[in-house]
Each structure stands twice: as C-alpha cells, then as structure tokens.
Length: 97
Image 1 (tube, helix red, strand yellow):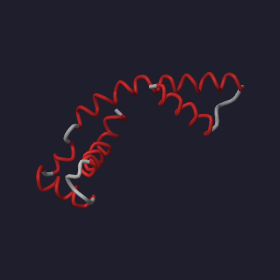
Image 2: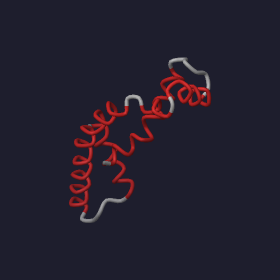
Image 3: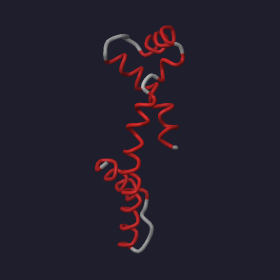
Image 4: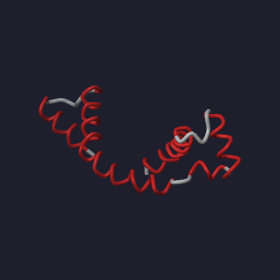
C-alpha cells in the first residue's frame, strides 16, 4: 500500500521531469501548466499503473531483506540496531533489490 501512495507523488514529479529532460518545456512552471492545459490533472498521472507495477515487486524483495539484515545485526551485537546501522541495512537492501 505504501508504494501505491508514494506513486501519487512520484508519478507527477516524474512526468514533469521527463518533459523537461525531453526539451518539451524549458521551465518547471511551463511544464506544469502545459500538462494541465493539454491533458488536465490526469496528465500528471500518465503511467501511474505501470509505475506501481514496477515498484511493487521491488518492495517485495527490498523490505524482507532490510528486516532480515536488521534482525541479524541486532542478534550479532546483542541490541537493536541504531539509526546509522538501520540506514546501512536499507541501503544494502535497496541496492540488492
């Protein structure tokens, strides 16, 4: 569910970014107003389902690895992992996924 919600923000941002990178628009404000003018609010969500379909399998791989690494590290040191250790576990899990 988290990835579905995150894509509500990620997809419009990606659509604006891609239009800028492709040279369709020169400025962010132009891209936002152009997308609204051409397609309405739905234009920001073009590719939403595809993005969600791409992100879900990634999450199914990443989060079990993240939790497993934290559990093993905690057991190794005899206490819960700290924020830095947790972020390292997340970085590894994300990179592996």
